[in-house]
Length: 233
Image (cartoon, rainbow, N blue to C red; front, top):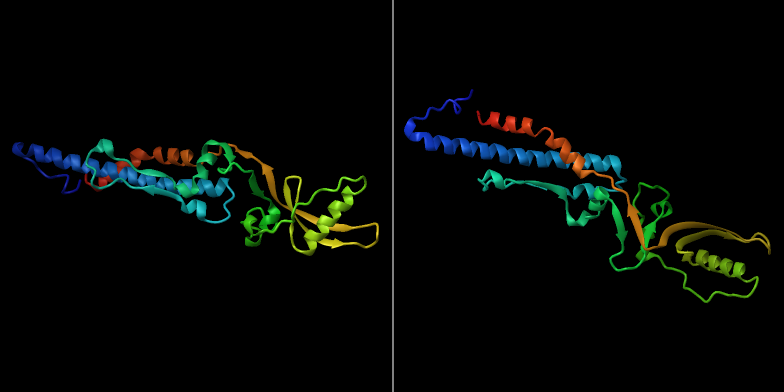
């Protein structure tokens, strides 16, 4: 037992003893919830890295915690928080599941692996940012019999020649390798880079924050005991 714990109080100093003990209890409780929040953040980051495709460190950097203020002396008001900032508010939908819609009411633009350079875990390359892509202007579709195929081939040719994006059937395509070996045959390659005809997507629930907090909470008593021991109680 520390010298601090061995302090002797006489009858007249009992109020001071109670104040000292209360102050130490409040301090231990405050440190306990702060440690739990810090540990919860670490566990949440582990869960996100294990369960989600993180193409950069933005999401994990937005997982943060706030500590209980040292100015709080009421044990009932001691609180600390762990979660994500508003910048990564989309992670709330990952936690509980739900539908995603464009706030403007327009369809969503969902990039494919091709827009990510063929690698699912890579971010969308800057050259493939939707705002930077120049789309082939829409023209009235030819409706004469036998002309539909040639109409589409002409659009593909123009898209390949001028490095334009070809919209087709609610999707955006990059056209390349256009060549015509014979008068009757035409060959070209189309890579789908965006899906643009979906009004919403559904996200299945994949809890990452609650399991982290529950894991840390299970060790609350041990953390509190450790903090009390530091104070010689």
